[in-house]
Length: 163
Image 1 (cartoon, rainbow, N blue to C red):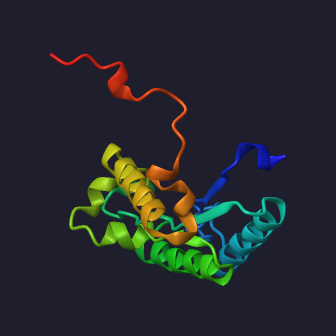
Image 2 (cartoon, helix red, strand yellow; image 1 turned 30 degrees about the vertical axis):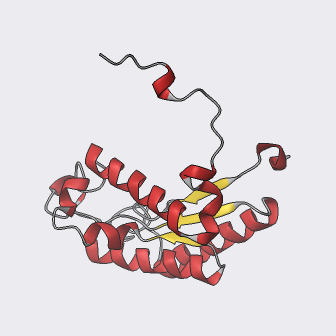
């Protein structure tokens, strides 16, 4: 039944809550279990949606300077879960977006997080831009390059009034 949609894209974006310290927060998942869970999800998706493009997105960094969510979380643990997400993607030959690494490479990475955990507007834009870049550069995501997507509605400039 999915074939009728043409291109199918599935993003797996888990880990921010899983990376909580299990001793402190109920959401926490052991690192090896997290990786195995991701692998199982990928296997199910490949079986149920053959031909779908699957992208695993790592959890983002965590800013422990913000105290609201600090107790059960750490940036170091978020980094470990990011590595596990990449490993799960690589082991099943699907694309991955190392959001953790890309954000950490930015000097102002903390501005991407509104409360230390959830994205600010700037963080949401960063994620969007990075996904677009992945679609335009990763051969396994080529169907989702901007130039390859069909346009279902008239271009914005058909409606815009200039001057």
